[in-house]
Structure formats: C-alpha cells, structure tokens
Amino acid sequence: MENIKDEMNTLLPLVRCIAAQFGNKCEVVLHDLTQGYESTIVAIENGHITGRKVGDCGSNLGLEVLRGTVADGDRYNYITQTKDGKILRSSSTYFKNSKGETVGALCINLDISDFLVAENTLRSITMHSLDQEVKEVFVNDVNELVEYLLQECQKEIGKPVSHMNKEDKLKAIQFLDMRGAFLVKKAGDKVCQFLDISKFTLYNYLDEVRAQTDKNTPQNTR
Image 1 (cartoon, helix red, strand yellow):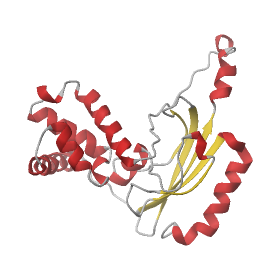
Image 2: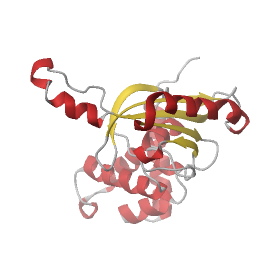
Image 3: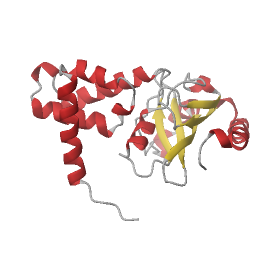
Image 4: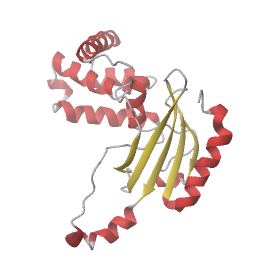
C-alpha cells in the first residue's frame, strides 16, 4: 500500500463492515498519516464514542509511531479511556508503503463500559482485572494533544518549570520528542513558552538530546 487515498475504495467498506458487525458501541477510524498530524482522520464510524469526526487529529500513540519511538505500532486488545470516562478495548494496526514508511492506520475502539458495570457484580468471584492498560488520549484539536503531552511532561519531571535546571529541561524535551510532540506544527512555540526558553535554546537542546538518544540506541539490522 503506497498511500491511503488510492485504497479508499477498499478501506471504506472495511471500516463500515467492522462498525456494522459490532454495532454503535464500536468506533472504527481510518487515518491518513502522510499529511500533517493536525487532520489525520479520513473516515470514521460511530465517532460519538470518542467525540471525533473526519478532519480531526490522531491520538498520542500515533505520534509515537511516526516519531519512531515505537518500532512496531500495532497493538491489539489494549485498554484505554476517553476524556468523558468511557472504557475502551482498542486495537490499532498501521499501514506501511514499499519504503517502510508509515502511511496510515486503522483503529477500532469498542466501548465496554456497560460490560464492566455488569462485571463489577461478579468480580469478587471471577477475580478478573483489566491488563495491558495503555494511556491513550482522544481529542478533536491537535493543540489539545500538545497540552496533554506538556501536562504529562510536567508530571514526569516532577517539579515546576521555575525550579527546573538545564538537565531537567533536557529531560523534558527528550520526553516530548520521544512522544512525537515536535511532529505537530507550532508545537515548538508551546514548548518554548512552557519551558520559558527561546527557540534557539530549544533547537540546541533538541539536537543535544537526539544525539544522546542516537548514541544510546542500538542500530537495527534488517
């Protein structure tokens, strides 16, 4: 598959088929990842599950795949949660072109909230708990995604920016870079404002952390 647009006649019926099979509790999303991450969704069924529509952006997991932080982004049957509290059982598979570049993704999000309510009455007997929990964020605006990553960054560093030294800010930039934040247009401006640094300093820090990351990452053999 070289690009999503050329395969829409095949992929759209697949999206509708999966959604029809599992009903209105199942969101099915098709992403085109060859353009800006600000607008990746080219088809969606049952978008009320995450509140998204065609033209909205992907989640934080897609950024990590595009950044290369995750070598194989395909994940199946993982548990995540929407911002309004729905519990989802999700699967995501990514499409690559002949050069090995990620060009698209098909994601399935099944709302299992009602099933979990019923399960609570049986939990003392079954002793079952959710595993493979993954933190995934669904948003309409890519700027919300950047804000989320900045909040997670703040938690990771564990101190306010006013108390961060250079080493802390390098760690913050590495955290954001590994999660694909800088693939979002104008994310650098938000990061500069967040860390109270200039763009010149940001680019220097980014070069520094990437050089260190490349140094510590074993080369893959194919």
